[in-house]
Image (tube, rainbow, N blue to C red; front, side, top):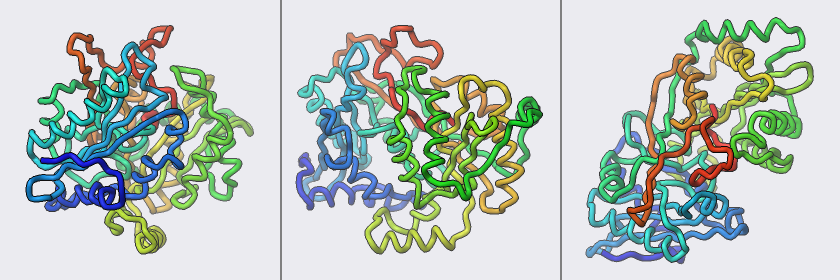
Length: 408
């Protein structure tokens, strides 16, 4: 077997051809969009490069000159040195069912990260935020994958655990039938705030992107900015997030709660894009874009993907969450476009949100796992700190400082 660094168009093309080999007989597989992955490794498009980040990719070739695996390793400057021990990452891992091949790929990441001064490695993760391409699917393999969530054969778990990785945290993905009425606990909570004549819940149809961005910014900074290690968001960031959703946005499922004119909560979803991307074979070239836009416009939708849920600090626990969920059932569902929702992953380190999800009457849809390994076995291993139990000094390993899509 031979490791080859991805350094030109031929090796880049080979990197994207590996999934076709691994999932040739998997009827559920829907490939990630090539362009989504390419921009992660593009120094002009990924801001982490400008902050001093670095990455590398390899493909693995067997004696018959067939590409049988791929992997990437990276140092994220925003998280690598935030804990007691510097930790890098590896991801975009694909490999045939062969331990020797898998370990060669992981060894390549380990050795490169040691050269970069790292003492540990998380994987499989993304060279960017946690909202996409994060974690290894370890339970519940049936059904088609959701957009941006990792999907892999069951045998990958053996690779990681036999290599020595340990579970850093679990990522829980939930499903809910939207046609089932909101549970009594949410109806009761919604009544707590809905009796206030100043309170309202609205979709964003007819509202400008600029105003949506301003609403999002205000709630985000009130709910997270400066809390639990999250940095405050700037308006240009909020604009960028909303702009990135423009093509796929359904304003009816961008739900905001208000007290008077002041936004105090949001429950933001997008259509499940893999219902449309299944037709483009992982490539949004000009032909893929035409097919995507056609299916986006004419194909009947079934599922929406919940991406972020938040309530301003001063209104948490006062029924705003219940009111937004009740609105979805009473206003969005009768529109007839969506039957169910996937709630993108919530970390097992977030008990408050898991309690909310439990009260919502969801079913556990998939379980992914983020693994960690320290290269020196004498370093004590600790799982991801539980939110609400972090030390005041915030000295926990690899603490995230950006908004996560785990806060559904």
